[in-house]
Figure 1 (cartoon, rainbow, N blue to C red):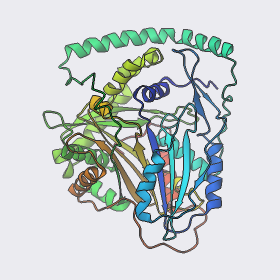
Figure 2 (cartoon, one colour):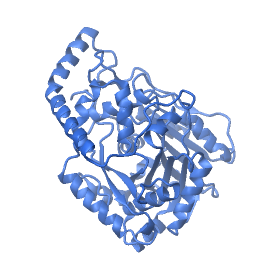
Figure 3 (cartoon, helix red, strand yellow):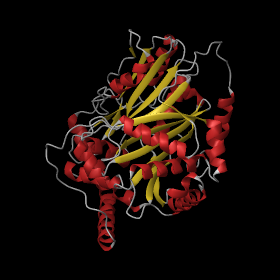
Figure 4 (tube, rainbow, N blue to C red):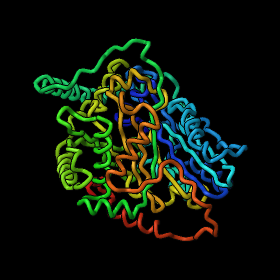
Length: 478
C-alpha cells in the first residue's frame, strides 16, 4: 500500500503550516464516578498501535508529496495526580487544548485524565486534524476501546536515505504532471468564471503587525436529550440532520453572519470514508443557501435544499477538487489565500453532523462514560487570519449515550468574541427551537451499580444505523 499522502490531506497540512493555526479535535469524556485507570491505560496502549499511530514525513523536495510513516516516539498518558473541582474542568480542557502537537514531528495526539474532588473524573484527547477527521477518529477510538490494532504497518520515520527519497519523490512528481496540467486548466476556467460573475466582497490582503495578534476562538458545548431532539425535528417536518442545519442557520442569523439579502450559506461536509480508507480527511461537501427565518417553525425548505444539493453533489463533481494537484507547488502566501477562499467568506457557516456514534467510543476505561462530546479547536489562530477569512461559525453534532452533543466554535467581530458571547447566542438559538439544553459539563448525582456486560441497546441501534448507511456516503437528509 502506498504511503503517499492524499492531495487533500497534504492541502490541510500545508494550510496549517501557512497560517500557523493548528486545527485540532478534542474528545471529552466525563465520569460521575472514579475512573478505571487500568482500563484507560489499555485504551491508551491500543491507541498507540491503532489508526492514530502515524505521522507525516515531509518530502526533501520543496514541491514533493509527503508520506505517512510510523512515529519513533509517542505521547505518554497524562494522569493528573491532584484532583481539581469540577468547576475547573473547562479551564483544564483549555490547558489540554494548548498541548504542543505536531503532525510531522510529533506527538500528533495526547490523552490525559483529571480526577475531580467529588470522586468523578474527566478525560481529554486532543489530536491534529492532519491525522484524522471526525468519522475517522470515532473509528480509531472504537477500535482502541475494543482492543483492535491497525493492520497497516507504515514505514519507519527516516527509513529512506536522502538520495533514495529525492529519487522516489521526483518520480512521484513526474507521475503527477498530467494531473497538474489538468488542474491549471481548471484554475483558468474557474478564474474566468469568477471574473464574469458578480464577485464577492473584497478581503484585506495585508494587515498591520499590530493587529496580527494571537486569539483564542470561543467554544461552547451543550447536551440535549436525544428523544426530545428527534421529536422536535419530526414536529418541524425535518430530520436530525436538517435540525442541525436549521440550528446553524438560526445561530448565524443571531450572530449577524448573513449575506446582504438576509440569507445564510451552510457548508455541509459529507463523509466519504470507505472500508480500509487511509486518508486522514475523507470528507467532501457542498453548500446551500437558506432563509434562516422560518427554520424554527418549519424545516421542510432546508430539508429540500439539502436533498437537492446532495443529489447534485453525487452527480456533478466539484471543480475545486480538480485544483488539488497544484497544492504541493504553491508558496505559503498563495496557500494562505486559498485557505481564506476555502472558508467560504463571512456569510458561510459549517454544519457537521457525525450522526450516531459507535457506542464503544464512549468507553475509554472499558465502561460507559456519563457524557461524551467532540470539539473543534484552532490554537495559534491570529486576528489577521480571522479578518482574512471573515470569521468562523461551526457546529459539530453527534449522538451517543442517549444524548445529542452540540459543540459550537465561533468568532465574529462585533458579536462573538468570547465564550460568554457564544454561550448566550447558542442558548438563545436552541431556545428558539423549543429545546431544553444543559450547558457545559453537567454534574448530576453519581450513578452507582455494576456495569452491564454484553451488547447494550445503544450497541444495537448503532449496528442498525451503520448497516443502513454503509458503504454509501452519509445522507444529510436522513
